[in-house]
Length: 299
Image (cartoon, rainbow, N blue to C red; front, side, top):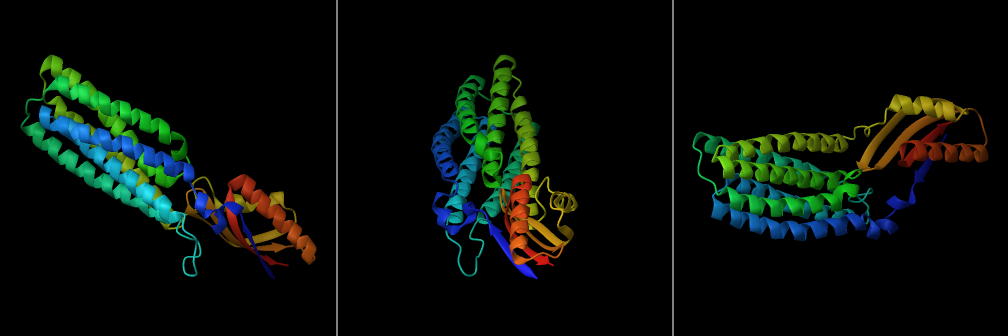
């Protein structure tokens, strides 16, 4: 029996210093933009007495905080592996995503509670001023969405931050339309209703992020990968493979997959087994983007 290992170059420590450099720069840029607008919205909410605007500013603070967590997580993840952290610090990004989801839950609860209170006792709101400040927030959020959009597709840490940005954008849209309604009708109840609606949507997004983070930490098979299908396709692709058992596939961090398995192959020499291993790794890499494998051959 022989044990074979395979690593894709991008997970080696020598590449740690360039790990997600683009994502890091994007997060830093969005942090600066968000911090400025957050201060504007806080001042605006005080001057206009708008709970919806304060909610938007509060959620923008969580957005800013989430950006900071995501940024720091990438910095830590870039550190080299050591004798007791053999996979390095990549999982820190998953912990950051989990923390961001929990933070979103807390913010959602606060906004919902305050919205209910204001719904019971509506207060006058300066609709025009709310509108102007909310438009500024909406513009900045839209820019942030465009900056982070590409990186959020495949990275759970950046996705966590991206959900904050999307939620902020939605908040700003709701506040803008609410301000227009209040300005022309004087229906101040629109303000707390907007806040409650925003909180419910944020809750649903936070729930999805929480679930994804937990699945990675519990080493569940990545989305779209079924072990039975992988085994069947591998046998079909590599005729020499007779049987596969004890196969495990898990996600170290976003789009960084690992596999271990016992594979029984027809009796071949050492040279032939190496060639079969290369074909197996190529198939797993190209079909499922599995980067690291540990395969034991039973000949």
